[in-house]
Length: 337
Image (cartoon, rainbow, N blue to C red; front, side):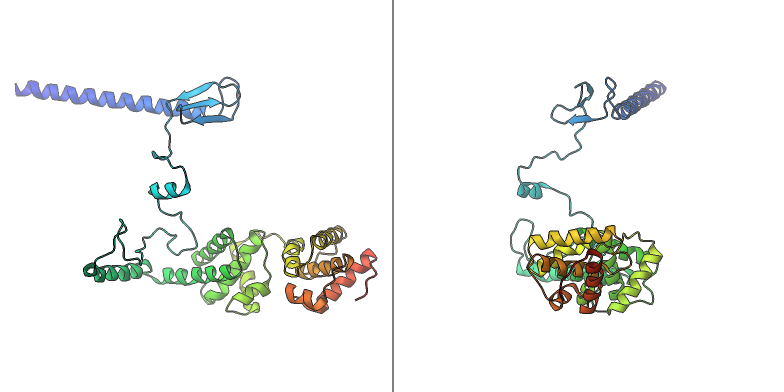
């Protein structure tokens, strides 16, 4: 009897293994079939396919042929009709970010003395909660590298906030600084200098250039150190930074000078002609932009003095006069200084 029961048990296990293997084979066949079909429609060869999760079908946009049915919806199982409901029902945390030393993946104990239901914490548990906050804050930064990143990224965020820079530029500058840390380029240099140089490089990389004077105005280091560190980072990290066009400064400088749209358009026309005649190559983009704005303001009857333009742009009046003379001689403009 015992032998027969053991034999039956063994046969049952063998049958289960066979069924499991058959299921895995069929599942792999379905996956392979789906991967083959999802590339293009087998009827018309169209590569634009639509996934209709309401009907659980994958069909061709052109001929309407149903390629696959019973497809799995990878989205959430709940519904939300506005942003508040979506945030309330979502169980995921905030997205990862380079602007925080731990990329925003660690937990944070809020300073509001309330539990998950919104009820106030009793005075008996407040002392324990305070100690939990204190130790949680300590363990978030537990070595020298993380302390370096925490200070540097907070400095980056401070400068970017003062300059009103976008989230994209902040992420790019934080990534550049992390690359410098990974290659051990921080040793022997101040954290403020490297963060300022990374922010300047990120502005150029994202096509939203800021002058060195603007970066220096919010930094705690000199313009000379920022420029030297910037050139070092570009060389060591092999950053591909496009040359700055003078036209990228026109709208911002004209807005700060309260100039009209006609002046902005005329400045861009002057820069376009100067570029065609190669008058901008080898010249500082801010100086060329300042001269173009100065000339356009005079031509449009909304004149600004060279001192006003130089204070906004951040170049000397001598630079504006030199660029002005070059442009006026080339275009045959007779405008008195």
